[in-house]
Image (cartoon, rainbow, N blue to C red):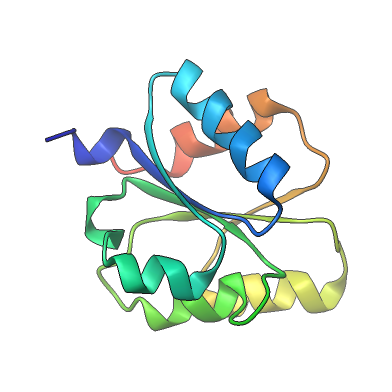
Length: 121
């Protein structure tokens, strides 16, 4: 079984970006689990294996912030990603308990730096 600290769970509805994030994180030495929706992640029941979540804000169905709120107190830290940088998005992320928000497109090194700061160690 893999080390929880090294497992990053990605929830991103864009197939190409989801695959790119998986490749980046695997090259950086992380194990990844990737899902196209909040509902798919919930059905898989794997959040407890995550050292960090990478959550798209605007998902089809339940949003990333709504998912993060539902996970409760024992949830892993999360990095939110979005292409919609506005006050409403920032407020939704902050209200959900998120502290990191990256705006698409972002550099892979930026994501890795944020994960290093926020991930469970």
